[in-house]
Length: 430
Image 1: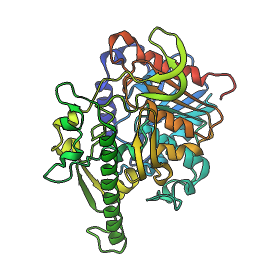
Image 2 (image 1 turned 135 degrees about the vertical axis):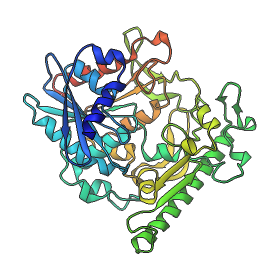
Image 3 (image 1 turned 60 degrees about the horizontal axis):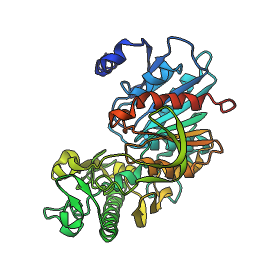
Image 4 (image 1 turned 45 degrees about the horizontal axis):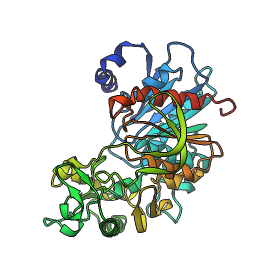
């Protein structure tokens, strides 16, 4: 009954247009105590390619991906793993079951895994481990290894689609506020101080190079200290002397939760402002062009500025093990520029999308949204993909949730999912 109630709530949360036209059939699937899926079935002709979508937080059932791809002829399963464990390896079993289920449907020959936003690192992690086994996420290069018992005999997908993916552990690490963490803010590291380049009236910033360097060094110091603290508590726990025998609470003050955080590139749009290389841009007028792609986003970060002392936005109520698995990554003199992020050991975290990308050999698409700040992170992942058949494109004027950031950019949702369908149907790819 609880699962049925969740399904009905998901349907009720859909926009009215999604509930009425066109009609789609949905099938509910349970994989056990914590895992479930909702399959959006096309009402007309169905492709021989099926899709599986997962995300490490929240309910996926009402996400646009399932409806939009089913309307284009693709049976799509939206996967939920329902417990409090946010580690990516906790989701592997559900994704594997979903891939096997979809592959067994009549007429289905290939299954492609889709990840959006924080689901991008999840999809990259899953496919790398499915292709290469538990050693891909548990080697000595990892600050914290995956749980190998959870990632054995995973069913690999036949392809991977990453929609506006985040970087994984570094995305969380880069939300740390080096000026916070105590009752007194360090003015020399305060990204919202006018003296450091922030304009409070507009919410826009132009940070000097020296402040950027100082800020990144402060983030790295705080990150290293948090990692060392968590590793020490882990040693205590594993020695049987912790607060609990399996894990411990780990509450961090001054670290962003999800989209919030002390990220300089949100108010300073000159950072992560364009790709390094030419790529395909899906334009608002319906044409395509090749070139270096520029972000058209507006400055952000006001919510973080207003919520610096709130637990909701700038407090991470996590645990020792979950912190190490989701936010711990090695850096050395890291820097965020206009078109690159340097000084990060991408392979040191099993939740790192760029760290997992080299192990992905199946056809892969990275599709970013140009009215957001993930153009360059998406390109970083794309550059490291091990696939011979890989594609990168951006949707002009699309926000992170696929809609247009200004009316002149038109129907960005349609362009996004039309392009995914077009990529899937290239002759010889699948």
